[in-house]
Length: 208
Image (cartoon, rainbow, N blue to C red; front, side, top):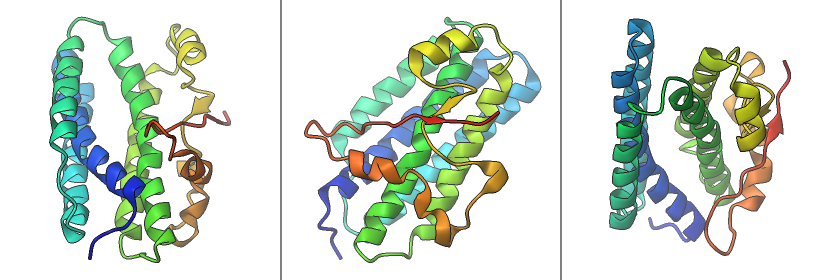
């Protein structure tokens, strides 16, 4: 079966390659921190990203969706550059931008679920839900490391993510089950198909 949904196909291809970039970035991030507990946690997150890449590929293969050579090259370079930069930009920024990235990644998987459901396909719901929730766990971890840092208010103002703002509306303390998770990132589903193909993020306020 081939999908007749260009936005979903592009999202799957992009997510597959972007997971490689994230994994490369976390290699540098883990290597740059001195705390052994932080190093182990970041390494586990890297493993999660490799697993997500594997799972996305399984979905792509089911629908005969080819891997994008352009996205593979683009995100390979991005991941390696970020990995290297972790050694030179200090401790705070790798944690901050990792958290911001993971916050946006949450909705990538819930948008996939929305798109599939719109086609009447529900067999991937659990997998996509679990990947979205795992990305939220990553976001929460990175935020926990910097939430008391004096730089966070400034970066939150500049980049629209932090202790009071998120790029998704998932609350791990009050999770909806898979069958009721359509409320997650629903607004983003309508914002995805811009003419330039770039996803537009909506910032959700968080409660503290």
